[in-house]
Image (cartoon, rainbow over all chains, first blue to last red; front, side, top):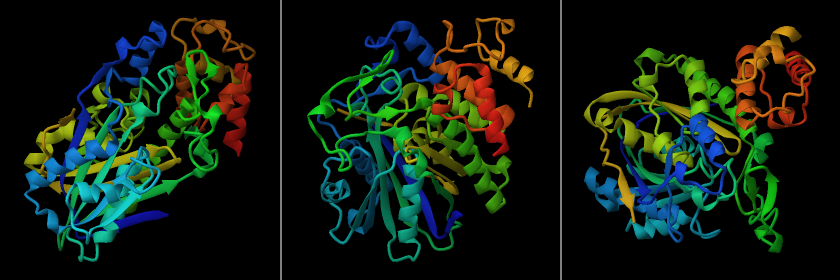
Length: 352
Length: 78
């Protein structure tokens, strides 16, 4: 069982950046109006932020990181690690984290790493970065996480396009001797790899002429092979069983009193799924913030984005115990629990 | 589990069609209300009442309520 207890590390701050352009789901014209109405009701997604062509996830994360470093008062030369979680990198190669190290003006003595995960990626990324820092030789490091899924969704696909928004986030981690640290539960089920997939453009199915051909799949769903395929039923079924399971595993393993936890941040998949998960875990609504109404599903950014948009005041002003849980593409899932104390949380940043 | 209860629980996932219109051999996709959203409701009901994970393929390859019932029953015994 993949449980981890990473001691002596603490989250110090969280920042999120979204594109300025807002797309209202009611304004979508490529999908039949009654379908859109039903979708909004079920998914809870009313509007999303979408990037202009040419803007990458790294641009959003860069802006979030710059502001966070400034507000923390960190000296850039003290940052010794950077992990970038995304499935929308700048290039196939090199790794975008290398580019970000240079753009941010971090030391060349800084380790960098890209992680290709989506919905579970924030929690996975923290576990990776925390593990690197645990020995105490790396004192300060950044986790950047986000995606520009609007670039990968077909406008003619009602099963993806109205759901996904774009966002980039930055989270600051610091080595602090004596800190309780962060506890994790991590899992994977690759038998479901086709549930959320972009078929072409990698090396299993290389980009070819047919990759650009639009294929009608069913009523209201057509896309090409470079665009995201999502089996909504599989993902829903997976989410409502796996998310409560991993949170319960974490709670049982570490003897956590649910009542003491101030905020439960779940990956923002869709309202129907998130509500099922909340009810199965018997959590009160006010402890489970939602940001999907205004931002949709922003992949690995959903948890830090929700922290910033829904609970900034609480995180800035006191001590909190938080649980975060991500689940999705892979299929992959992860949950964590930690204490936070007076975090630095800049107001939501906009790009462009 | 029994089929009568299952049909009733299945029927409750529809808002507009009265429950007495459903039977074990009802072709549940052959009506105006069935949509991918109804499918999610059915998956949620099965998860809650039977602790069984229905897949997209399970729903796609089924035509009658009994087809779904049989899948749930076989997964429960697995």
